[in-house]
Length: 440
Ligand SMILES: Cc1ncc(COP(=O)(O)O)c(C=O)c1O
Image (cartoon, rainbow, N blue to C red; front, side, top):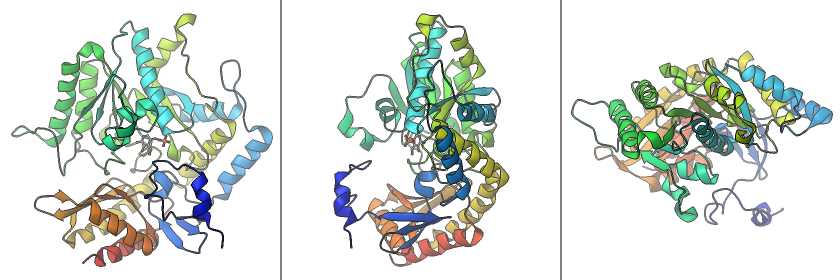
C-alpha cells in the first residue's frame, strides 16, 4: 500500500510541527457529515472541516456550479477596468444580506485576507476623514483572526506569534467576555459583559482616542475555545465604539452564514458592525472565498477620494469568477434548506446532549450557540484547572471511535456541517461519551 504520509513530507502543512502531523488522517472522500480515509476509516466530521463545510460533503449542485463557471470563465482580472458576472451577482446578493447599511463587498480568498483588508480599510477611512493618527486595532485575548502578518498580531493567542515577532505596532489586547473564567478585573456588582466592555473603554482611553482606528471581535470566539459572550456585552461595545469614533469590525469568519442560528451572529444582540469579515461557509469550503462588507459611510469616503487617495488594495483572486459562482449556488442551497433554523434546532439538540456529559468529573463547562459548541475539560471542577493533556487524550479516543472534534487547549470544539441530521447529532454525543468513558 502507498505510504501517503511519507510522500506527504514534501508538503509543509499549516501550523506545522513534525510531531503534530505524524499520524495525520489521509482523507479520500466525503459525503454529508462523513469523511472516508484511504485506509477505510469512516469518520463523523464534528468540525465541518475547519468550521466551514456547512452544506456537508459531496454536494453535486456545488460541483456543477464550479464546473459550469470554469468552463465558461474560470477567472478574469477584477482589478479596476474589468469585472465579471458571478462577482457582480454575488455582491448584489450580499448587499444588505448580513446587516442593514452594509451594502458593499470587497472579495478576498479567505478569512486572514479579509481581516487584513478590514484593518487597511479602517486606516484608509480615518485618513480620508482627516484623522491619520487613528491606526491602532484593539482585539481580545484568545481571539483568532488569521495568519497574515497583521492578522497574526491581531490574534490574541501568543503561540501564533512566538516565532514571528517583532510585532508590528498598533495591536492591543483586552480580556474577552468569558463567563466561565473571566481574566480581567471584575468590580463588585458588575457583570462579566460590563467588565469586558469597560476594558474596551479603558483601553481606548489609555491608548488615546485619537490613535484607535478599530475594535475587532468574533461574536462567538472560535479557536480561543468557543466563548459565547453574555447578552449585555455587544450592545455595550457598540455604544463605546460610537462614543469614541472607533470602527467595529465583526470577524464572522466562523459565525457567518447560519452557524449560530442567525445568518450573522451579532443579530442575536441586535448589534451592527461597521465592517464585517466573512469567509469559510460562503462557499461551504467548496471554493476559496472570503471578503469584507463595509458600511455605506465607509464606501462614501472612497467615492469622494482624489486619485492620489485611491484604495490601492486588491488580490489577484478578488472576485474570482468560479469561487463567486459557487458562493451564489451555496447561498441558494442554504436559503432553501433554511440553515439558520437548522442550526438553531439541531444546535439545541447538540448542546443538550453534550450537557449530559457534565456528569464526568472532568467536564467543567459545556456551552454553545447554534451549531458551535465547546466542552471544557478540567482536572478539578472547583478550581477550574485546565487539563489540556486529558483534552488531547479524549480527542484521540474520540477519533478512534470515528468522531472528529478539535482540541483547542482544554476545550473540545464541535461545529458539524449544518446539513447534519438528528441521528448524527446523537451519534456525536454517543461517541464522545464513549471516549470519555475510556478515561475513567
Ligand atoms: C474567526 C476567524 N477569523 C479568521 C480566520 C482566518 O481565516 P483563513 O484561515 O481563511 O485565512 C479564521 C480561521 O479559522 C477564523 O476562525
